[in-house]
Length: 606
Image (cartoon, rainbow, N blue to C red; front, top):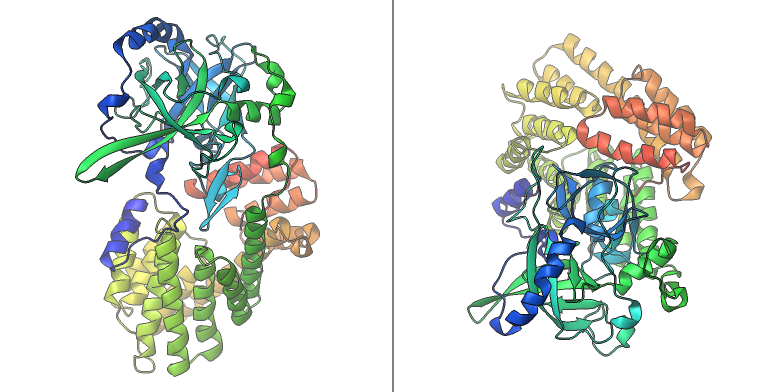
């Protein structure tokens, strides 16, 4: 998906924008570039020989973790008896992103284990809407590498795990600078997910610890806050989660990220790890200290600083609340109120892409349904809509939604100058639509939207019928597909087919509106707008109107049952929704169903 959107960005002369606080994604260990390691940082040969026998002992305890299609990282055993592995939080995210699936394969063997649960460090931070917030939910954004990027994996019952590695105690970590270290893991250039019967083989690296800072890159802090280390070992994709250990075998850090820098024509690499006292903190947070063979004083492990709410997260939740209310305003056909809420968000958080996206929709809605004329005022709002869509795409170039809204705004703006009763041809909008259609991995609804836009941008020429039929095939549950079909038949002067298409559009429009309102009533973060009984009534209406075959109505119905505490019903309905939904939508419903299995209602992430 990112390939498409970067192409689209280049095609229209834009480049992604990142806030100064937001690192490039290449900093995380699974997306890092390579680079030369300065010779002066290499470990003396005698110390490498000391590590050789140790590495042979450690080999089986290093695990390849991930899925064949979802990516991989590295983990290592920290409790043989209690079946615990340690890794990075951004590696554990693979489990959330695949709906709860994660496998672990012991180094040099064909033994495959299943991961049962992931526990995150309470201080993990993520990049969300241009902000860095404390949040363990991978749906909200990517892990910020300068944070306690640590997670613990529990392996399901089964074959015994290899022996655990020894963890350095918190009070043994204050004098690590220049210490010789080793690292074992599964870099992507050496490792791919093994075929059945094949064994993964970990790669060993050696180096020294070069620097220790806090997560704000400061050294002027107490020693117990120097938890972000820089080391001299080359960082490659897949090394994320690898243990960094001393010649005595004690793990002192977990590798998490790296980047390549060029200065004065020469290239060098920087690699980073999370000091292992962050792992002790995660263990304490989840009451797992007693499951580790090495005992530490619980009072020596401080997690109290994570007990207070994160002000940045509180601000983000307020932003989400306002965006949710703006969407409700749009459903209630009050677009200018929606736009005002989005403006309030933008004033507080200028890099929040969704605020520009929703405001773009609100401006287009205002012209099409309230101004309903081709005049200077309409053109002004269309120009503002295009500017907002362009800004959203700059801030979030990985989202097809923003480019689709950009194409709509282009068409609307060109139509504003067309004679009354005519339709404008927009070559730029057609290019965007065709790029989205041709890209693998695009959501069904986005592909349908792109086909529909192509018909619209082509001024409803002879090929438009085929585009509309392709839109319906891509996603038959979008009312606008049938509205477009009705428009086509109107222009072809076929009132019978126009009426049939419009009737289907109207019925589906009502069902989708009921389903959307039911979803908001069941899942809103704002308690004032959450009502399980209303959600249930609306969701049932949506399902009845679509013969219980529309996955969106079923998803809302499952959420409504969960909001009312009827989790058995929510599980059954969610299972049916998963069966009927396209794969890209089913993944999110799988996550929702997991919440219902835990007896939790779902809250929309906004």
